[in-house]
Length: 442
Image 1 (cartoon, one colour):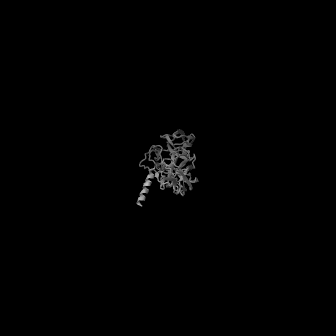
Image 2 (cartoon, rainbow, N blue to C red):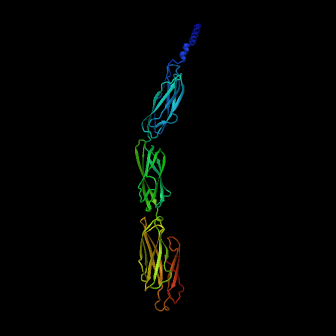
Image 3 (spheres, helix red, strand yellow):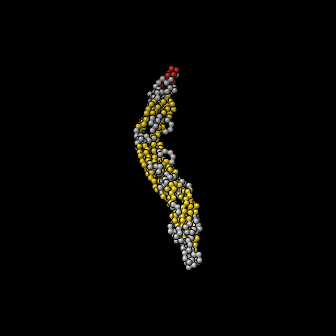
């Protein structure tokens, strides 16, 4: 038996040494390698998710010698771009023996805006046999079913900024900024913001257009837009309501509209309006007699930022028994530009019945500005009339009167301190005044 087995093994060795047999085995005249995909080609994912794609392959050749070499898998993006390769689109296996298995791995990303549907990624696998001959390419489709529950964006106004100050004055240029946030469950795209309620009489655009575009605001994302506005020179003090309109789309391209109101506070525009003052006031500082003419002149100057209109200037004697106007007591000026000055004159005449005393004259300047507000300025001056004494001056009692007074500064502003100088006159030319006391009441 042992002898028979030895003879059999020797016979096999002799056969293997035959050149024809060795050549046939070396040239691979048997079956070529055959790669097949053994894993599922279907996956599920949610919007915004990343997932691994594992493609299992097997060399399903029936020939034990039919190995596969340089196996390369290429995975492409979905044509819509909503599902795409996150990393390398290639993976390879150096060698796969007949009957063995391996895998190709890829990582893909699903866009947050991907719709609820199936997406297809093309897969190609190429490989070679032992002799370096490329075998037929395997083509497969990787199907990814997207279930997107993140579909409802909601843009809210987190903050409204009025810059550089919350309080605005007439003529100011300001920036109105909006801090926006997406608190919804889906991304917002094509966000458009505009303002409603603008007008030339209140607030208008200082520059740019009344529309801001933000391409995309992700879930939980924030954005900031601003508009440059100018307050009208004519705007009045108060709170002004404006409206901010928003429109944006969800991942299904359905349009969502929102609106939000905000307020701008306008301060008093006195520092921006017209402001008339009286300057260079000239009038007799010494006494005049009966039937004497007195001239009063002064300048009015607009030191404000707007033209003053419908200016009416009056000068009236408060006691016309002793002092009467010799010229018209009312002067009207249609307009006075900012920084401009106008001189006015009035003439008065003391009457023959005037007594020795001080006769006040009230000067009034009234005007309006572009705000439509009426303003009035008052100033008093006094003309002292010295009349002849009646009867026996030696028997009369002495009498003190104020014949002159002055202020420093000449034009006193509300809330400011000032100096007042008074001059007293004894109407008696024969008797002195003694032990007199001054009491000033307001």
